[in-house]
Amino acid sequence: VVFKGRFSLPKQYACKFSDGTDTLYSPTAVLQCSDLENSAACAAGYVDELNCETPRWLGAFRATTVGVVMHVRGIQIPIWSRTCLSQDCGFVPAHKRATIQGTLPWTYQTGACSMAGNKCTSSQNCAPGETCELLTRQRPGLEGTFTRFRFTTKSSMYTLDANAKVMYTISSFHAVSD
Image (spheres, one colour):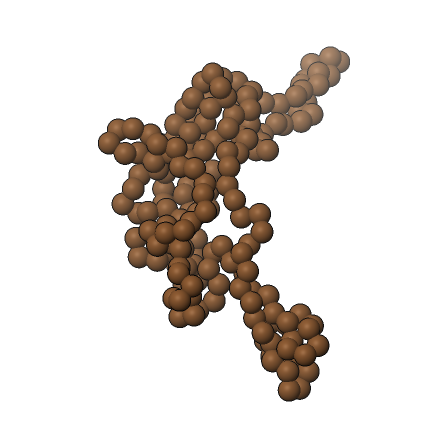
């Protein structure tokens, strides 16, 4: 299971899977950068992906919730998704944003031609004499919460050809996440 976000390299994280009765933790998550050259979330000391190995679930077919926990002095502390408003988690104050090339992970750029108002990505998309005015906006729907994760067992459905005394596979079932 891969989570996107901003994770501190010196810290240790894991995934918590719970169905309300049983709870399992993944081994310590692997932290990695999705794109070393273009990701503003991968500044020194941080990465933007957390990869958890799913633990062996012995509770059969169950719907669980999965969340991220941080290991602190032997205690697993839930990491709640929140709006980032401090420099420690990657927030860039408005007065420093002009020096950053491109967009930040939680923003996108949209543009409009100065006179006609047509959508644009650069002044080349506008009529002669017009400029493309780019605006940086917050990504809609950028939030996090517990996610449903359904554990299944690898299984198949068979049909029996009684005359030939042979079983044929009709269907195979694989793990799903919803």
